[in-house]
Image (cartoon, rainbow, N blue to C red; front, side, top):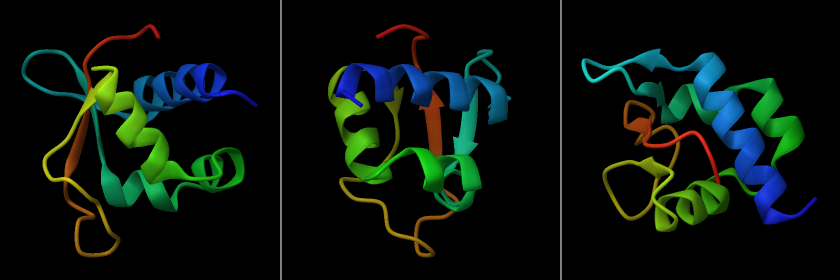
Length: 83
């Protein structure tokens, strides 16, 4: 699976699992993301995918690196719903 396909799946996942913030953007907690069976069975490197999505301005999150359980409460916000 290529990066574009993974990004599309990431967008779909956050849209389904996320809860809207005050601006209406879907948000999911990092801890919920990395422990979800769909994520663990679908994505080979979840954090690497998040970094790639952030670089493309698809998602936003605080920090340079996210580690579980230390960063489980960090919000991952979906900024746009296309690659």
